[in-house]
Image (cartoon, rainbow over all chains, first blue to last red; front, side):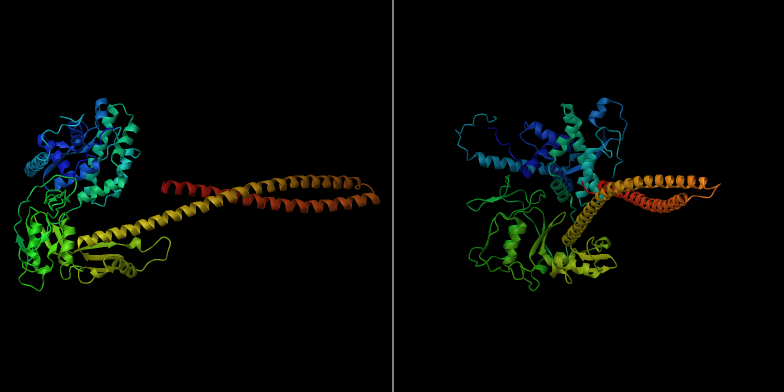
Length: 131
Length: 440
């Protein structure tokens, strides 16, 4: 039976989003794709979780935003589309966001170190668990 | 800033575009400003169309890709609620006289990342997240227990307990919490301990409030501003943050299925349904013409807006039911008329058959009369001819009357059929237009 995919807590979701944005500015759909791809599809951030989170991060000044006009990929590949397209919202990590990311990473490391301290040194990983 | 809708993109806006239709429904569920709603719409539209592009690149048909992309968003109303909750504007608060700033400490202990805050057996709390972060609510880390040697918890310890889990200044409006005292922080709450570990600030403050005089009727509330938390009695925030909002209730005074409601009666109903004890001291409400004026805290305005929206929904539901009843009545009448038209057509045909025969009989009688009169023109008529002439005249008179009666009845019947057909076509037009404008 396949393992149940791990569920992202709000804190984990924020940590992943900030980590993605630390590398480069991005937009909602691309952030969700990036998280899914980098976790080998183990983590999925649904729009119902992603966009409210992005709204909160924006209101807190953790990310800054800008808008860009884009065309549909399908239409662009067909060529010759001069319609105004749709608007895309880009997110960039603000200085406050870098501090928030650092705090989150530190807290995460403390937490995993605390948990690791309880695990017997000779505990073997279960078959199929990733290294 | 709203954008112009494009009509050339194959998966972009048009009246028949399913993504646009879904977005229209979604935006209607948001109770946000038009500008905010438009921004959310634009971002979700980008998400949906990017997803559709991706799905089409891996072989989905466009309708299937659209269906999959929309389904992945989840339940529409719940999604709208989440967006609305995240987008709700927060208000900047100002500190008033009688307040004090307590420097907030850093979050002490491990800010542990777990799915939900749960107290351990040893009383240690695994916090649900970093306190000042709006994505998670601050959680009391420890129970509040009286200091060594002291019988009761002091209010200072409550403040310290809050201080432990927020990383921004805490403004305590002591004057509102202890209006009769000058020495605030050492006031004892007459409890050896307050079990708040693992509770959210709001839940924990309920425990604290219940331990304080007047705490049931006017509990402690913590409110978040942009740069600080504020702690006070609810009545304090109710008075200080009250804003005046006008609600046009004209359309709500005329229920579809009942007598019109008087403006004052409507206003009294609103007051009775929303925290009835609030009005007068902490909030004010009045009605001028058909405009409801409410001066109250934003949380009360949220309740008012919700109540008015519920009334409006109820009216809309009643209107829909009335429309459905009317449609049913129209359809029943149409069916009845169609049956009557068939029945009357048969009668008309029968009458017209009788009319044809009567006219033939009349024609035959006239021929007889004409022949007899021709025969009698140049000589004296015989007795038999006189009898035949009188009989032909009687027959003509009788048949003329009959033809007239039949023509009148047939004309009336045809007129009724024509009226019924006109009514049927009117009903069909009405049914078609109601069916098109009504809910699916």
